[in-house]
Image (cartoon, rainbow, N blue to C red):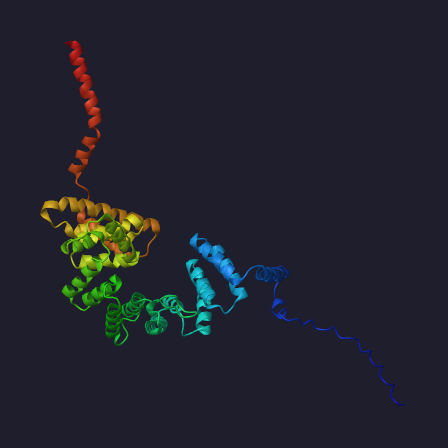
Length: 411
């Protein structure tokens, strides 16, 4: 018998796979996340229909002027949604994210700008150099310097001179910008890459280039001082250090101007004060200045720098410690020994208390503070008892007056 033919299954229509452009990436998201993304896309579309990228950038700048960086980021991101390849917007977004501490987002924006326009705009390279270390940082800074030098050269060759702006590039590049960039390179060879072969020579070369482009750059002068101190040339180092300090420390600048027949006009003094503020190095750099001044035995100038830092921020342990150390070193002066010892004890005690409060982790500094306090010893007991007597003088005076009144009554 012939086998019975198998019944054929009816061909049921297959369920069509849903493929829609842009939805493939949404499958792994929750319903809430998908809804959020769709709402964002709708908002972007609505914004693009209502505002231009230029209008959004104006709002971005307005928020930045008011230090509202969260809103600035929102407006800038919307502008970027409209014009994803706009270099100005990318640069602005990178800077806003950097201000907010969002390093990854800032890096993403700057790298996109590098991809779109590698030969124009130096600021993105400067930022990328700051967030990287070692040779990678040097490479970013070096590329930024190359872009700046090309911009300077093209500007000077243009009919309008140095004021000419190049399309889609930095509105202006100055010799000082180049100098600062070379300082960044020198700093890396002086710290992160100090053990690399030829690091000292590369460091010195970068500092010399920085001074070539701006001989009055306080940072470059101080770096040269640091380099010379490290190579056992303290006298030459001190000369560069004092030249640096004279550019921004009020007392030193006035002294330098006085030796040149300083000006006394009120308007000129205001201009000088504004100039000093512009030349003032960053906080951390001034701490380094103070350390170098201590090494150069310029104790009074070091104290002035440190006291200025305290006025800006009185919760930096290192500043209190250095002030204590400076006073301790000056306690050798016979005529003012006790005064300096008391000041050293006060500053070092404050440093120790602040160290414990902030839970710092610089054990070497703490050990030195405790060593110095141990050598200074406790406060003079006689001075303490004298203070107590002064504290009680009011009671004694009242009691004495009462006694005199009683004597007068008797007579």
